[in-house]
Image (cartoon, rainbow, N blue to C red; front, side, top):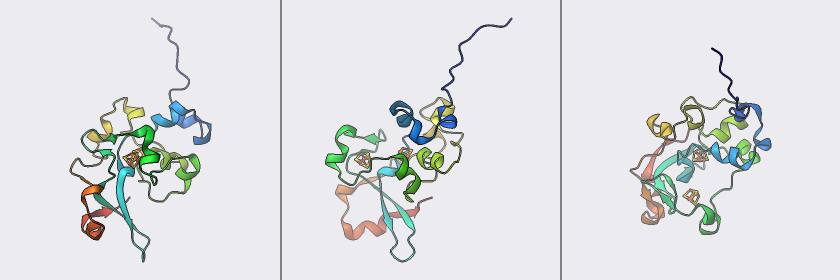
Length: 154
Ligand code: SF4
Ligand code: SF4
């Protein structure tokens, strides 16, 4: 028996639209909530390489992997970026797993992305999300930052 079913033509919007064409809801849903853009990064002045630390922004809720005050984040943390399609194309410190960066570079979403798995936990299950063993930047002195490097940003 053939059953009639309405097919949602927008279900794979990320394959059909450019970043510039997406509406707000679509744009926000691209974020897998990995938390990697809330880590303190160090750029090597000599090599230009970017290193990840185990230090998080002071507004980052490590346990729940989210910003504590998303609506006011740009006031409270002036260097928190507002991602745009243009920034997704040019910011070299976004992780290679970040959906904005991937789509800006004509790469597909990874198979573990929540939009594909329909499971918001899949970013954690795939081992992509930030560790919950992070320090807050409020508790780390500037002179100790280099000792908190945990690897290259990829
Ligand atoms: S790195 Fe990209 S996908 Fe991960 S939390 Fe930041 S914006 Fe979202
Ligand atoms: S202000 Fe919020 S969104 Fe911005 S880096 Fe800090 S925790 Fe992340």
